[in-house]
Amino acid sequence: MSENSEEAPKEEKRIEKAEKPEKRKKEEKGIYTLYKIENDKVIWLRPTCERCGPGYFMADHSDRYTCGHCGFTRYKPAEK
Image (cartoon, rainbow, N blue to C red; front, side, top):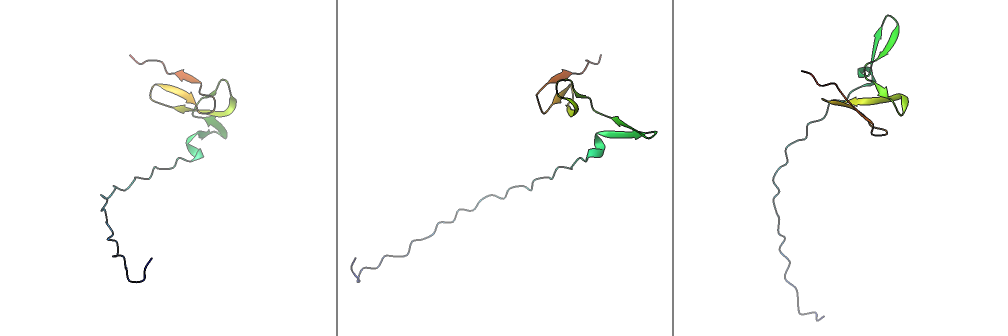
């Protein structure tokens, strides 16, 4: 390179991004939503998985119960 040649400074192109809407934080569900205490006894509110055994609760969906561990699905009876 020669000392006399100088490069022109590069122009920076700035692209403005559209603002994203703020994400809503999900409400955290505590362990107290899985149990109920009546007369000094603990009652499970959700069924346990038939394959995995006690300690594995099934997720409560609108039309079914699903185990998150093994994927077992039990459908709820249809309402008439």
